[in-house]
Amino acid sequence: MCMWQPSRETEMRNSMRERGMSLVEMMVAVVIGMLTILAVTQSMYFFETMRRGTTTGADAQSNAAFSVYMMERDLRMAGYGVFANHAGLIDNCIGGTVLGYNSERTPTDITFAVDDVPFFPVSINPPGIPAGDPNTDVVGVAFGSSDIGVSAEGTLLGTDNGAGNITVGNTGGVSAGDLVLAVPTGAGTSCSIYEITDGPGAVACNGSGTAASLVYGDAAYPSRRASCANVTPTRNKPGGFGVATANYTNGRLFNLGHRNGLSHVYYAVRGGRLVRCNHQLNNCAGNENDTLVWEPVSDGVVMLRAEFGIASGGQNSAVDTWRTEICDAGGCTPSQDDWTNLRVIRIAVVARSQQSGAADTTTTVPQWNGQTAITLDGVDNWQRYRYSTTEVVIPLRNIVWGMSS
Image 1 (spheres, rainbow, N blue to C red):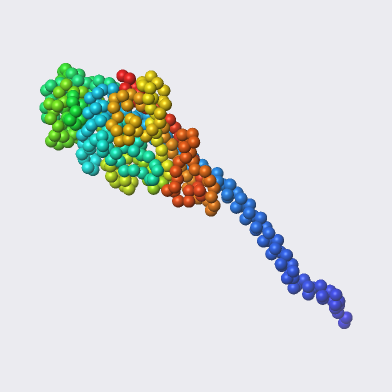
Image 2 (tube, rainbow, N blue to C red; image 1 turned 120 degrees about the vertical axis):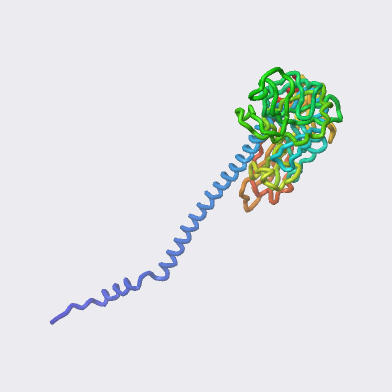
């Protein structure tokens, strides 16, 4: 029987198929694969660089804008209800000592003094408040929540002032639950802040009669600010402030509004963050590293700068001078004329990107106020970050209106 046998040529072809790819073929394939990976990697690196450049610039811009928004919101309220064109208020309280109390605060006593946390409606680098990061400013602002706004003369105090009460010619829009600022007639006596707990007519929830005495007790009382529900006073110091009430005879009383609406707020940059503290609620004169006292507002903030706009020509002139002092001498106490000339405050916030580059991306320091360079010497490797500067000029309308009333 004859069987078919494959030819020698057929056997060689089958043998070559079983051997697979040759070394040369594999090397060519590896080279092609490496070139493909290199091209993909280069494309990814290019798009990642573009993405980081876009997003890091965006986060710096949004942080700077948000920081300025928060500060501007408070600064536009500067002086509301706590400042007016009255010699006693300006000389004895703004330029003197104010005593306050808050049982929910540590420490409970609050003392404002011109050389140690002043009662200024607006301030730059106020004494008594810890400084921020190097080359940055601290900005302070005070405002109340009075329903009647700024009153130049306040309410005249009577002669029959005793422990726990003060007499007035009229209630001046005061309600039970409001804070009031008692201003003496002469220097040397501290101003005092009291929480009104009872009084005549519309002051109390169940009162009636003509205006006479406003009471500041320490027992629970029905508060108009709480829809006449009983509340416990928090702003009246047991035993009083030790101020002779006779010194308030013929003085003035100013309504500050709701007890939780009185604010003395300070902004600073610490550790690359914008932080905020309310001295009425916490001790801003210390605890600068406590985030429960100095609450973080925004990350990535490296600089805060501020200047006052002064109209040196008087009340009807335009801003022609910029400085960090309200008056023209460092460490001075502003006079009534100095407050009259104050118009605006200018602030600038510089924020940087969250991520740094491997090489320098910024060669020129940020600027504000036209061509004024902002020092970033304290920021490590500052050239490797992107920056955004947001600057705004804020009219101090309550101070302007208060001085013209």
